[in-house]
Image (tube, rainbow, N blue to C red; front, side, top):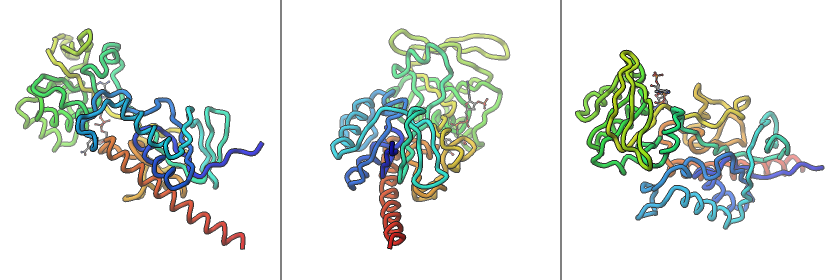
Length: 318
Ligand code: NDP
């Protein structure tokens, strides 16, 4: 049986993937989009989104992703459930495997697989996720104005987010598991200069407390074994993200953490016809609006790539 061949294959269904789909569909490229393991992406595990332009009253993250999907469908995107489980970018057209069985040929591939926040792995952290537990200070810090919060982590993200939170909330406890931070000196300096950030060194989280909402966190000093309870309403986890890019690593250039390298100012990867958008290639901004913007770039780059390929093929046929 002949393999299915698509012009634009989009892998992932967050703001980057759906925006790529809207542009590609409106350009008549009949994109096929595979939703992946978490349809709608990271925004489906957040609550109110108040920083996406165009929603003056804010919108719930899951609803926003339903709207993105509807808009992509309106222009004819073929949205499918399923995971891309393999990729072969050694030739052209590109080959990808769906759910370990079916193979598709794609003239262009837009990788929009996102990244996943790392979690501590506590039951209480999972139970109170979205009810005071968050992995994104920029998204959720605003809801804790004037309250006390804790943040776990000691890298640049944690330092940056602690500083960001300190401008909104009354007090920030920064829980650092060792006696030093990994964050760059300048970021550490900002933490130390904030009068309302208290760094608790050698401190690990025992549990996040609260029934329906966070009302505290129990921590343990790893040197002394002493436990104490911090009365906080928000608990932020900033221990890193993992881009969902493993299946592409044999072909696509990435940094040590697995973020896809793109040619600056474009969505182009090292493989012609393969484009990367959203958090899979962005460890700095990681916002819905920046992901959507890069999804647009992916679709426009794919459209140009296909137009050039078509000219090449016509010339070869003459
Ligand atoms: P990192 O991997 O750099 O840091 C993760 C931090 O979380 C480490 O301090 C680590 O502790 C801590 N951690 C990991 N697991 C646990 C755990 N189970 N319990 C408690 N603490 C834990 O991730 P970041 O997201 O901070 O940064 C990722 C990359 O992005 C870095 O290269 C960073 O420089 C860059 N970045 C740059 C920014 C900027 O320049 N403005 C802003 C944000 C990120 P330990 O140190 O003990 O291992």
